[in-house]
Length: 187
Image (tube, rainbow, N blue to C red; front, side, top):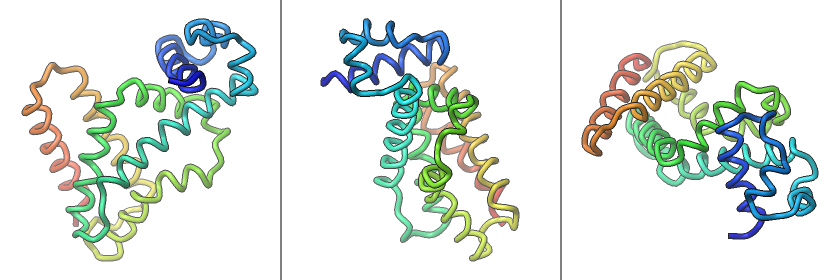
């Protein structure tokens, strides 16, 4: 693993455990096995490190969803694949998801350009718009639908990660959770 990746890996763990302000760059550098100067060679400021960590994991999530999703199927089928892919990525990347949640509740979120946020949300927004246009989902504001979907995903993940479920029960619960969400938004 190269130094930059190691710094990001250690920063993810430490920030998720202790928070943004209680994680000094000196501790990140020490645990990553690099000098402070090396950390600042890759990231000019601690804010740059935090933003890089956020965009890294948001990009990974978006690419995972894009890889598993297709827009050629019906709205319900496409939405199902999107939902299951999102749950699976989060389950496999729980620390990254915890970091993303922390980030969204922090002042750092205001530093992210709106264009980047729109790009990361574009698949779901376009899917919702298509569903509205086709009359497949309830005529509600896209922002409300988006918020409801995100909240449902977070609630499902919180449930799944606090239970010691077998793989079979994990998948059954995920499918039931999707059905609940789809029943809530479909027309």
